[in-house]
Length: 324
Length: 269
Image (cartoon, each protein chain N blue to C red):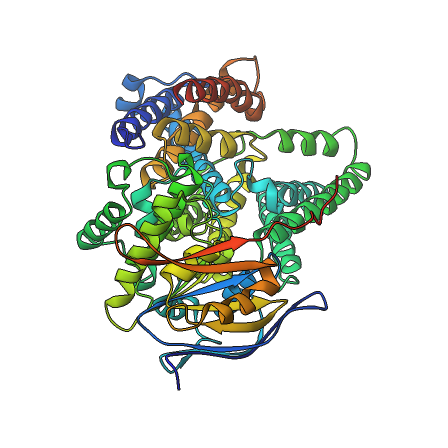
């Protein structure tokens, strides 16, 4: 039966995310206490507001965003393995960030270049796919693969011309992903874009489900397939680009969260999309907590999203199969 | 001018003409079967009529030219059942049927309670209301066809274009589907054009039969009116040597039976 207690699952995921956010606010190299904050300790307050809050908000909002967008990509492309990589978001952002590190040093420059790279890659993929007048989703995937390969070539060229001591290491570190560089000053724009885009995707949820039918079938259900798909992909891409431009590449969240949500709820309704977002947020917050607590220094967050996510996905898949 | 008019329809794939100057007319109130061999252009004709395939020619329903209409407006006039629905996600049967209301809803509007009731009624009519919350993906192909029929029936379209809607159904459900479609047609200015594989089903349940042969309309039959010889002559180019018989059934109705002469196999291992 499909109807399970999605509300209960969403509540549980919400509580988990909230708990991880509270933990995240109190975890880091500089110790912060509730007493210290309430007593108005200036240094603790500064660390809390400038570093911890921004990092926690980015972890939660970024994870929610990746979870929701992963859900949307998989539905629109009718492919359970679809992710932002499919249309070149991640590879475009990587190439953009590498260009930023080389030619426009500074956090803001790198963020802007990564955002621009992601949008340019997706724009190129959509432009190439427009050559197919049939507007098939498979053409967008093929165009995305071509753009991904092109962006990888650009990235390789930029790496070859990078200074191996500093620039190459920075590129590699950016690609591995971290919430370390997120501060209150660069957070606002990205988070606002994420929230607006995710809001649009939730509003269009019913239409997104219609896109899961074949193109001709969706059209005969009254859907403007090409236009709607474009709107949905642009909204999802803006959100993912905003996240990865601030955090670097974060693997697995966009793939794992939607699968887990579907396996837990057994459907693709709005509740499953909400759960996907909440699980994405919890996964990224949890991984970020581990990234700053596990080693002596700051470790890449993608190490832990994969480490936490892979066994969970296998467990849910096996459990789901047993239930059939 | 007839209720539905198709004039000079031509469709080609990569330089090969699949439909050549197809013209015919349909009147409301009945089911028209589209018969033809594999590759004769049945699916292409239906897809062209509902604008999925680019084509030359004009299709008109109740005075409204279909070419150039927005998908939403087109879906308000025509319902379409593909050979197989492409829904590949876990969506409940009820949600699949509710998709049929989309042409009547605005972009952000959600189906009303009344629509949900109608969707459950439609599932009831195809015998699947008790499984409304189950996943569509886990149904058998025949059950999927029944759900898609329910989805099409809740739509507002007055012309239904059905592409082998019976191909995965057992005999009992085939006749039930055709019975349901006949009831639907009788409620106002409505009509059905259905590509069917089973000529006997078509001859016994449809008001008219269009015979498509290599992309052209080869014959138009009216099984209740035309003579057996006329119908045999029209169907033999497709099915080979056949014989049609009118038989009286035990329950008093007259049925057409098609016998097929055994031929030397055209295929060899």
